[in-house]
Image (cartoon, rainbow, N blue to C red; front, side, top):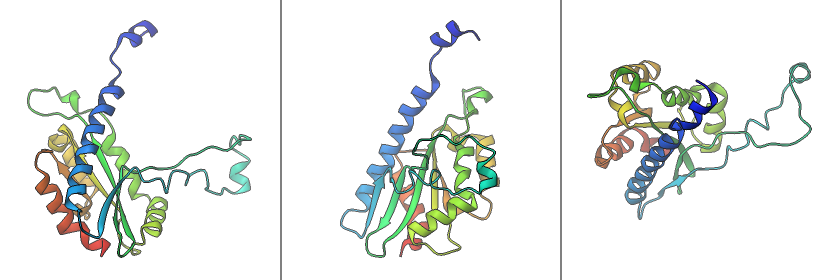
Length: 198
């Protein structure tokens, strides 16, 4: 595709980002209401990890092989939300991943996208160690919860991929296919994740 064609094409990130923002707002509103007059709070865009990668110390051998700019930069992770227990000072980090999917009336290619793949970074040993330490969670606790929203929550291919990847950890993901159904989302948190923060 040439430059002119690309300029005319709809930028999918703009539409996707707008839909993701609506989904995140829905999540925030649900838990803000749920946590009223409790020891819990939901915090959007927690910044405690926004520079964790820049702070990683590399060996001289590795440094000798990479570009080392003579400037500072910010490079890290900003989860969508943090759920804090103000009493115990424990925190669970939340990503809300909205993605289109292959559902009734849509072609199979409607399921393309990699939001679900990007959620897997939370399984990496280094990131888990950092999130656990800051969240004051135990050594064997997964310090995150991924909420999948949009058509991905009903896509026969993506749902199977997530179930495979998260084998043994069903508490740490949730397919929120209907954002009007806040009860199922809250029930999942209360049954599976709230106890990690007590």
